[in-house]
Amino acid sequence: MAEFRIETDRLILRDWHDEDWPRFWEVTNTPEVMRWLGGVANAEKRRGAEERLRSYRRQYGHTFWVCERKSDDEHLSGELLGFCGLKRCNQAGGPIGMMEIGWRLREDAWGHGYAKDAAAASLAAGFERFGADEIIALTVEANAASWGLMIRLGMRRREDLDFDNDEFDPDTGRIIVYSISCEEWGGK
Image 1 (tube, rainbow, N blue to C red):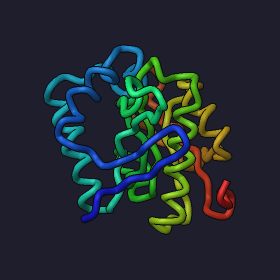
Image 2 (image 1 turned 180 degrees about the horizontal axis):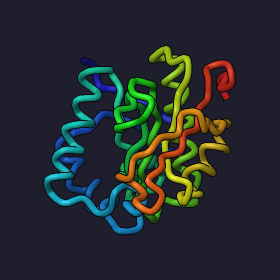
Image 3 (image 1 turned 135 degrees about the vertical axis):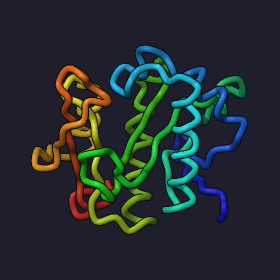
């Protein structure tokens, strides 16, 4: 399978290389980044996550890809910011099998528009390259930054797809869902 790569003006989304994992965990496995993602991951959870992301690529041709910054400054170019991409929903209780977009960026990358750029490129790939009719995104009610981005991407709240799962927010035990159809996306 050929290496997957998408470029935007500021970012590169690409397949994982073995050497990416230590840096990814160093910059994203922090209390603040992992606050709504089940908490800081121990070694066993990290290995499980790595294998799941590899398996999505093998099974479906897409995954949550490495997100790198492009820059004119050679010291900033190629810096791993986190991940963004597509998978099939596999959360217990959720809309299993629907195409799902997700992102996780390091804390110092927040507030610069990188997540929106990466997510827009991933949505475009989902509709144009992978033939999705609809793409969903999952979060918890308390994660306003996440659902705020979903709204800015043109996604709409889908309460009919919400489900119980306390893996990410033990206080509410609820996952909320947003979605966008290919028609709604329209190449934004």
